[in-house]
Amino acid sequence: MDKSNGQVSDFSQVELRFEGKESPSNLEIMEDGIFIHSDQNVAKFNFDGSLVYQEYYAAPKEAGWKRALLYASAVRAAYIGATSYYVSGAMAAAENDVRQKDEVAGELVSQIGDAYGELGNAASSYAGAAFRKANARLKATKQGRDFMFIMSKQEKDIVLLKVSKTTGQVAGEINLGKDREPLYAVDDITGQVYYQTGDAALTSYMAR
Image 1: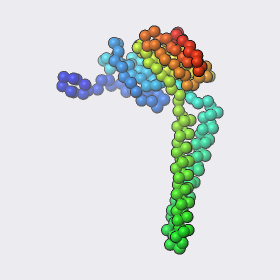
Image 2: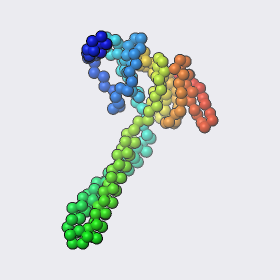
Image 3: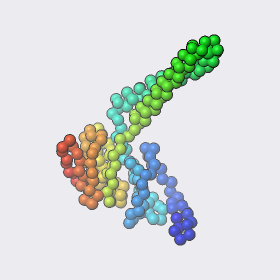
Image 4: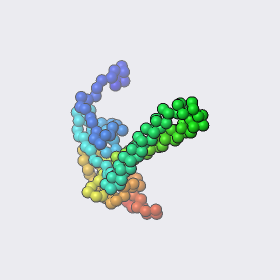
């Protein structure tokens, strides 16, 4: 946007699409261009609108067996939800006829229908949560002045990748083993990483 007249124009004709169903979450004006990123994607544009680079570093997922259990639970909950909604609807349809003959029986049918409706809501809510958790990627991203740290996977291990904002390439890494929820802080001047390895233990790393 031109500040002098408020006129808005497109900065670039390059369409930027991030992988992993992510959307850009932050934009930073640097000396040599515009840096854009999400949790697992990084991209950079020149000031003339041309794309310098775009990279994607996949986040680790839940262990395969755990994902399978979550999917199975989600499918079962979805089935229970659908069945419960069906029974609830049948009860609601029958309620008026029953109530005309017996008020007490009609009220009982109504309460049973409500109970099945609540069960359907609970089961459907659980199914949705299970699907989201099964698909959830574990993310832990921190930024520095000239780099950012992205949690990714390397074979069976979790790694913190030090990604250069200048090139978008990995400039160093720290292997976290099986720790999927690391607690760490980054010195954005030196690139030093302080990683909590236990309740009372703190380890310092320099990603190289």
